[in-house]
Amino acid sequence: HKQNFPIPTGLQFVSDTMAAKGLIFLEAKSSILYEQLHPRILSGKREPCEITFNDFDDVMFKILCSPETPNIVQVHIAMRSVPELRKLGAQELLDKLFPSMETSPVDGFDYALQFDCDNIPGDASQFLTAVSELRRHLAGGLLNRAFDSLLAKTSANDPVVSVSYRRSESMFVCPSASKVVVIYQIDFSDLTDRALARVYLQEFVEAQRAARTSPPVNYSKEPPGELSSLGLIASSDTAGFISFALEERHVSGNGKEKAITLLQGFRNYLHYHIKCSKTYLHMRMRKRVAGWMLILNRALPEVEGDKKTAAGKTFARK
Image (tube, rainbow, N blue to C red; front, top):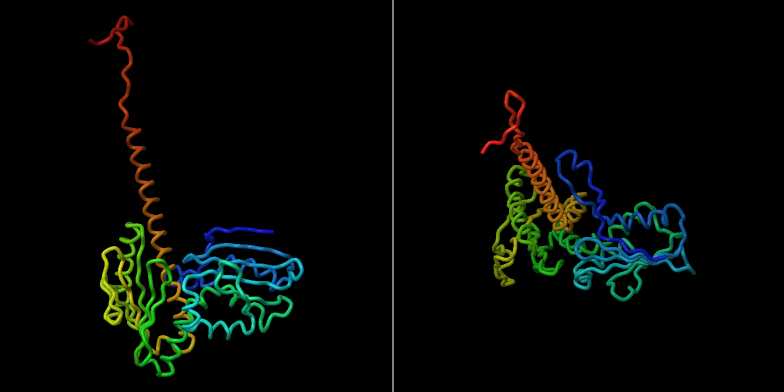
């Protein structure tokens, strides 16, 4: 059977962080991919299928199981700049997580995995999570290599790397001896989204001043100094550039995986909260209009009836 899914709306969140800070972070995994693979990997479901659906950043997935071998699952992904990402560190991470599982993608897709549900390597739950985070591994391989180089104290001579992750937006990774600066070029086609994005990005800078242990954050409409060698030209048609400077203490131990997850999902995090803000504003406006309409309805003048004399005769004023 074939199914086509829209971009997921039932998003799941990191509940502990949301409860502690009042913030919402989108999960790194694809919820639809996780839900479709869960019964096959953990519950023994063996049925042929062909499922195609979309995710953030123009990413598309396809799950294939043939009638002849329903235990064999192929997961295909179409994503921008996959060849560049694989050369810049994603291939190393994928080979480590999915050894000997890469297969040829079907037409229209850029990378594919194939695995046997009857012979899952290691812990099945961890494998399911890893496959559902395939997009995160492709996008985060570049960051993983940069942070490993920083921890190994070999990042001083690494070049500045840029990757186009959306049609008019890029991510830049600028290594140095003491830190790795990750820069996002942010743009929105909608003028309202662009204005709200500038407010949010500036708020990141203000919030960082109160959190002394967090990575330094900088926002500007001009390309930051770390990108001077690339000759970028500032444009008033973009929301600007936001940079995060991560030092060794930020990526030591478990901090590295958390930093990769949050950084690679930053643009989607920003986009989600802009949409939530617009929804909230629209709800407030609709509520205010409803209140005004109620007041206007109450302010309608009363219609005067016929006047009567003491004798009971009616007359009309002229």
